[in-house]
Image 1 (cartoon, rainbow, N blue to C red):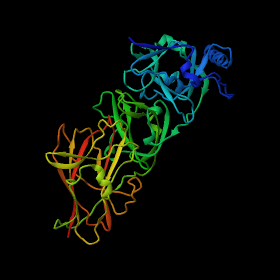
Image 2: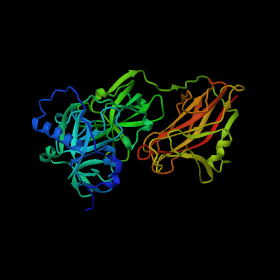
Image 3: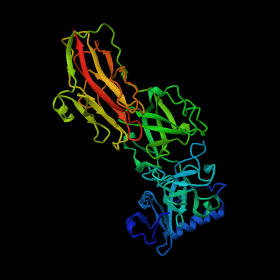
Image 4: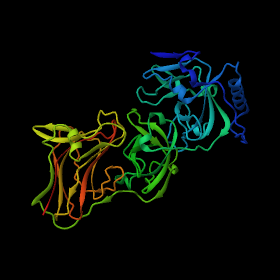
Length: 469
């Protein structure tokens, strides 16, 4: 058993320890379930922290998280007090024997989990409650080694376990103060490990179109179901995870665009960042869906004349595409993009989120301008193979008005035949799409949206061609 002890001096923390704290004057009524002894202890803790000669010091949530050592349980041996606001609630059964607390009730910057051997924690630690945790004798670690969620609990070897019921009142004290939490407004693409435990808000989002008609949970799932939402205004998608024990598990997903408030957490294995709802009413529909326009050209098509063709056989490195009019770009903040690859003498472009450490990975491959002014009956065709399937991550678009930036262009979605892959090198499958209703300079775009540890499906793209009369 490996245990790292945090010495009482905590010199390494330096500025992370706040020696002063103030009690805000506020006109709050003492809840009936908050006993006098508990309130007196909160007053005493505050007085001790404010006393320059006192034994107790306060530490911030972010300061405490810096003590965390991956793969170990770190014992707190100093007289430190963590002060925060409860950001989660198990009132609907979507959390279990845990609470998240954050550093402030408005636009929090840091959060942390506390595991408790207590059911219905909302009766004692309600949403927005200000609490004080005496840390001496507790441990900082993970419930499951490698799950990526820094947690306060009791020693369990190299991990932490629940604070037992008889000890909860010795470590955690409630203030009479309960605040209405003000979520931090954030873009999906800006959510990171630093956001875990905080109460956030995402505006103008929607569930994937493929999820319309589904419920929050899949009836065949024993524990949790993940449902993906996407932003209508910025790049990014993230999953909402709902417990099969929640009271709203069988409720239908909202079908329109919405604003969502939720707690940031991680999946059981720690691979992916997720959102967890305190209540389904934290999703508020705000408007119609923002799905892209779908291309619907009618009429005849012809392959008698090749207008544009790229089979990548003359490409030895994807960087060459940058010099011949292609846009090959990662718009999610990372560096991974479409790469040149070859197999059995055939060259093609490859994309996958696997092993990239990018979550999400949003990459675009956009063709040079293809002029249709001197042709008719045009058809777009290309070949796609799919491998190591973990979910659909590829869509194909066209536009007549490319801005030079995939994220600001109004794209038209095609009905591309994106195959479902297997565990090996899947066969190439051809798509043929009528584009005869388009005019001028068009661009074709292949959008990949996946995540390392999530949807990692690998795709190969080849033989892009436009024909007509």
